[in-house]
Length: 201
Image 1 (cartoon, rainbow, N blue to C red):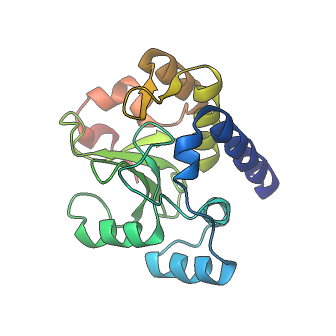
Image 2: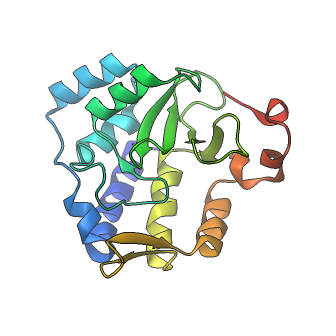
């Protein structure tokens, strides 16, 4: 997807969060300067313009136990990415953490060159049905588009009266995610089969 299109999606996400989930929006740090973003990306092993655009938008969560912007978490800081990389014993090191809810659920960016490059994978410590990360979003753009639609169709609702939780209508969310991510294994019947039959990276 062209950078202009991704930039416009990030602008729409920004407006959507300010309208529907201001608490999570205010928990996001402002972006760093390009020179710092480039240095940090080099250290974690990503050279991707879409990821760079994401961190030009925001610098990650200020408080990792704060309000979440989506199912499975919020954008994490470069520092948190490095910590998760250092402690990883479970998934391929070419999968780089970008989104998390304090480590239990992690969305990973695939940096391996090939047809699955740029897909977003779900790794879940609490999901015993998934032995290895499964592709969850077709791309960063698909993740952002899915998140925007989830708010606008009330699949995501921030509830100030429920300890600041992001309430999720999973039927609605799954329908939106399945439509926007036709090439991700998680939304197919394959994920219920043996992981050796569908694992991709």
